[in-house]
Length: 313
Image (cartoon, one colour):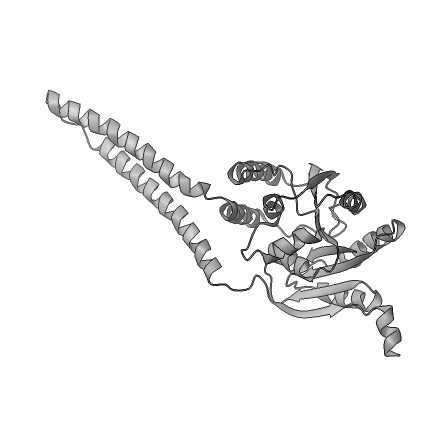
């Protein structure tokens, strides 16, 4: 059975469309499936629509968060609730083409344990978001040690991979986790489609915060920046030290205070940047050692199977 994990945040208009599009596709291709909708603390009628859908259909589970915990937490909750032999994560807005799931599933049947959805065309998005995404994936690929260019949350995982990820306690970056765990991989290219309804919930500020958080989660490279800056300051100090020593020997005093002021400001800036980087990592450590849950599920709905209804009668 295939578990379809669908994170949703204020997506009341997309829930049924997503279910109808995928369920009919799976029926045509004889793929047994279950749908797990994770409402990430929506403020609209998203969870009500999920509840209604679970009452009408036989293979729908709905999880409702007590507040907005973020997409990573929603994916984690979906993986924890998945009962299938494999699971696919897909956006509710259908920008990930559902027909590609069938291709992923056939590759899984051939023995691949992770099937990555790779963006061939990013679709319509702000130019700044496109440039930012390229920079982000370039940076995190170099820092993490594996190529994540054009990767996405759209991917299919085997049961054994799901079990491994579920055992990982840290708040990880899902796109990177699937690369980090290894296993036998295949890729499927797709073009990002236009949203079926509504608009993206990601702001530029949110994307920047998301990028910084995920880079720090999978690499200590920013910490090495502190060391690099220290080396730069050492070199500059040696140069100015030699310069001052030569001036002292030849009896020429260092002219003016401009150089001293510039050096002082430069050193102060380096120190503050270094403290900021170190402080950010300490904050991440603090968040992890508190051991709070990744999410809180306030309510759950689940479809009743026909067999359950018959036995009840």
